[in-house]
Image 1 (cartoon, rainbow, N blue to C red):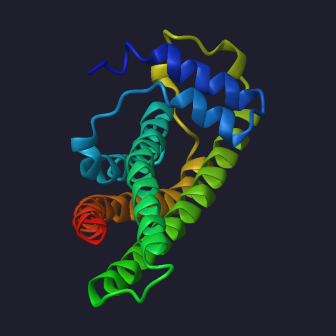
Image 2 (cartoon, rainbow, N blue to C red; image 1 turned 180 degrees about the vertical axis):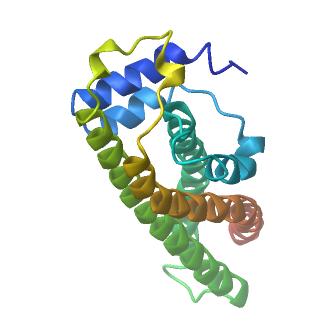
Length: 202
């Protein structure tokens, strides 16, 4: 695992992309190179909230954005697999009546697919909101052009920015908790779907 210091070039490139009014997609692409310890995910939110509003550093906030992105990517993979299983069961039951197991599986997959899509939408809104606030912060930062790999670690957000970003982090935390719940459930559902599909094809 790289240290925050090792990752300063990436933090700086993210800052430059934000300063250049890069799109949300471009900024997220830049920060996807950051490494974050997922096992510490649950600690990262209370950790930053415990700081004074003058001590919220840019790197910690960006790492939280990366944490959510990392979890989303993991769930997104399972989402694609769940969609594939749903499509497969649909094809198998297109010309015959679905049995009780298949009906229940299709309904459960539908429920979880909708939950994931809802969380993705909430995640998208949070991404847009937080990057908009960080852009505003950079627009008001007189020393923005002087940022470098050696001083990016000491870049703290303004209390005004922290006041706006705080509620957005709550949305991110909700996304994180939902992703944490969805991952194991989806794994089990996909395994069950594979058994049912195997029986139907056999």
